Length: 180
Image (cartoon, rainbow, N blue to C red; front, side, top):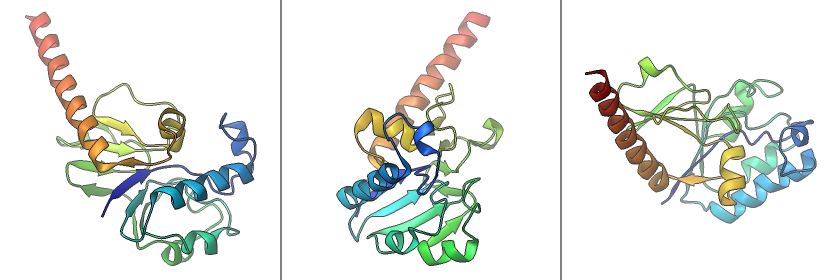
């Protein structure tokens, strides 16, 4: 069993090509998503989709036929054309926010006071990442151009979390030393 994370595929978004330099059309964006899914996901894979999945009903049946366990953390565009009843057909679980191991899974980044010694895995900000080591952006716009995949793994996120926390602690210690 593998666990994958991604955010903001924007399936069916009419103007997505004006926001993504690596696609030329809505259709190309849709095919990229479905091709990547079929390449990386099998029936034993758990996929956490952190919001803004689908902008129209046209691809619902194709999405429902995809393998794997699909878990949605709803985003700000997830009720644009589809309703929660549609999401219940498409996803095995639906959440507004979810704690998974030492991570908070959300669509938009949460306030730093709510992190409570966890790292926030999020999307929403597309290719703009927060300059704070406690936040990991898994938006497709960050993952795909860098890695050639719209997904990242739990192992990579744990490694990045550990590096981020170590860097955050070292930065905090340096700041305290300078303050003295």
